[in-house]
Amino acid sequence: MDDFHRLDTSRSTFTERRQACRLNRLAIAACLAVVAYSPLAHAQITTKPVRLIVPFPPGGTVDGLTRVLAEKLRPQFPGGILVENKGGAGGNIGADAVYRSDADGTTLLVAPPGPIAINHLLYRKMSYDPTKFVPITVLATVPNIVVVNPKLPVKNVAELIAYLKANPGKVTYASQGNGSTSHLTGAMFTGLSGTNMVHIPYKGTGPAINDMLGGQVDVFFDNLSSSLKYHQAGKLRMLAVADETRSSVLPDMPTFAESGLPSMKTMNAEVWYAVVAPPGTPATIANEFQKAFASALAAPDVKQRLSDLGVQPRGWDTKQTGDFFKQEIDKWGAVIKQNKVTLD
Image 1 (cartoon, rainbow, N blue to C red):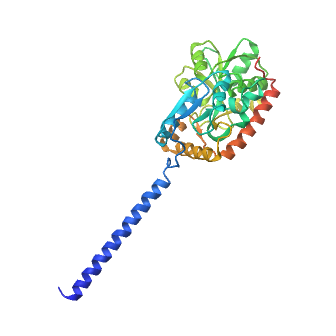
Image 2: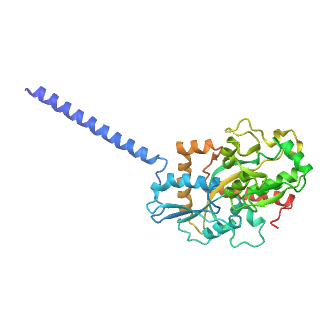
Image 3: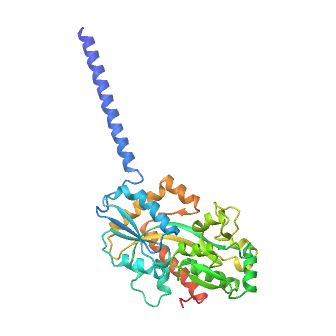
């Protein structure tokens, strides 16, 4: 081989190697980019077991939502992530357990509004101060609805109100517990409609639905996702959605405002599910948990599961969550005052 061909071959080999190296670097960079933007790629928060305390019994939306997210988040926590139900006192028992836990990211509260933004407006004595919880995120929101036992002779809101006025104090309505949005939504409804029902508080959604199905109670102001399957199966009858617009999962179900009754135009009540940490939890821990929950909520399979239940995923940052809590305290405080709601 002459010198020209040797040089040409050498240059060719060098060029090929350089291109190969460049391709390798691009491949590595691409892999790093995938990892960096992976929905669940975040700094490790703790190597200890993490407990997610749900302050209500199993069977409700908050319990199901928490378990779906725990399963999605589990690979990030080498010590494990556990869901623990601590029901009682309208969510206060579980909330108090979290309030008194170490502020190290190993114990979090996952709850609806009651123990975070409402109970302290109703209970004369509280063993914890909910305003001192460290906000992490609002996981999701879902509208409240009204369902009745099929034996009740009503098929829409107007018929329900007429029946209640004809039978004052004879119809019972269930709630998820004293001070829950379910309880306050019922109070809002009776106040706006000028009706009277007997309130039966339960320790969570599950027990309330069981008694609804058994006919022990007549009406339930539940959230959409919990009662949806029973409505679809014909075991409970849903009458209306307490939101400004209809739900995408039940487009034929009217809102309260669409009942044609002027008193129902402002009948809107939304439930939300949030995560908070014990007082004193560092902002770095709260922010990392917020990122982890938001990423889990953004996973396609999780989004689909929530969408099928009429639940809107949120994943708000810590500041937006804290501001939202203050707004909700003001909102439900007004409902409590206007309707003279008490726990007696």
